[in-house]
Image 1 (cartoon, rainbow, N blue to C red):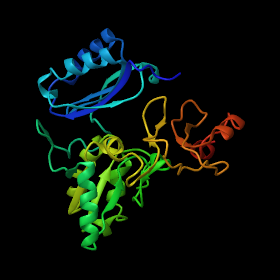
Image 2 (image 1 turned 30 degrees about the vertical axis):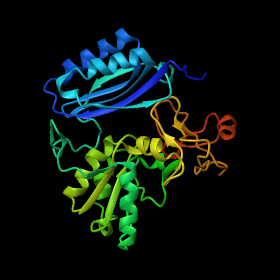
Image 3 (image 1 turned 60 degrees about the vertical axis):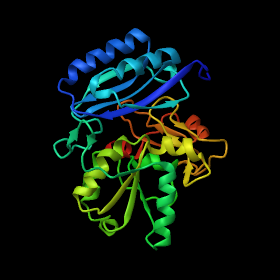
Length: 301
């Protein structure tokens, strides 16, 4: 079912110190319940990260009320097509980190956000940097800040995609030596909406990367600015029942089905309910192999 024109999804995050995350969680849960919104919200000592969907009037009420909290006044919202139907339920949780790098003690957050993070680049400024560094014979390196499977269906052209199944893998990857040759090069990190890069760039700088940038607003903002006419190629993985979205009808299909190798942008879960491992599986192969299990579960068996 297509989303109603009167429905929207709001995506947001905001880094700011929160003294009592549990109190904020209770407030946020009550607010969303009252407004009939569903989605996922994480509260941590470092701030808030959420995606909520529902009738546009209710979502706007939610945004206005949430921004009334003193620490969230500058919170930026990214709007997307969709509705509450894209989320099975409402989940509001307190966690140690907004993004699970397992590096909470390494990251410092003030009312101004994460300290020691990379230089933020708007989409237009990103293109300017790419052109400038190419003229200096120091080409920009794009560094994917998402889980590697997300890059199978969409990424920046020629991007470095670390071998990560979860965000927790990034610290190990950065300390592995694989990327030491990039430490004196201009590196631009990117992720879906920007939140992972706020932390990732700080972790990279702490480990000796000298010239680190991050795409402000993430892939979402870049797609709004340039669609499929820029440096992005493919589909964008999203964290709801849509699974992926495209910026235009001209989006390339760069994913390949792991079973038949035909082009696909579909990411599907392993059939074992206890497993959340995604991979690229086209519709025909999914229908023909409803009991498919991922490689991890095959090994475990």
